[in-house]
Amino acid sequence: MIRFIKKAFRDISLGRNLEYYITLLFILVILALDIFNLASPDVLTNITLAVLALVVSTSLSTRESLEELSKKLTKAQSADDFFWNVKRSIEPDISQAKYIGFGGAVLSRTLRDYSASLEERLRVGAKVRIILMDPASTAPDQAVLRSKGVSSR
Image (cartoon, rainbow, N blue to C red):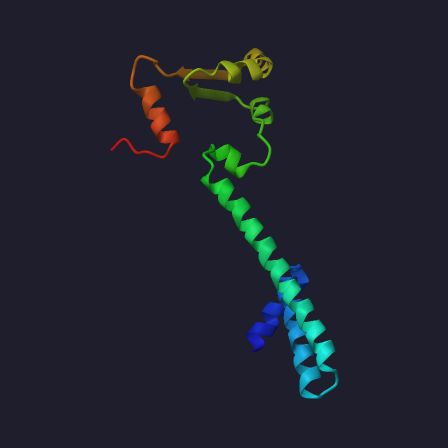
């Protein structure tokens, strides 16, 4: 019981699971009012309905959150899209790097987007290495398989 109380205080201080603790409080109030005959059955019924409404609204919001999370997890996306809300720019990294490396199938958009930074870094002596896949080899097919999580073994 003490462990539950400590967890409840921790959750409430962090603003977590508040709806559950409010529901529990209402249930305890209803129980006390009923045991000590401090309220009429009509009042107890109204409070019970309010608690049920709170439970239902909490369940619905939890279900919506789970559905949203499920959609995010089942949608095919890159690791960057999964871990970053906004597409992360590598511009700050490039602007200070001494060694810059790119690898990919085409890289035309990447090189276009960062051409000014790459040019500036080359002027100050940075080394830039670019590796492109041979389109005639199996490398592009392997890259597609890896992006889909398929092992070549």
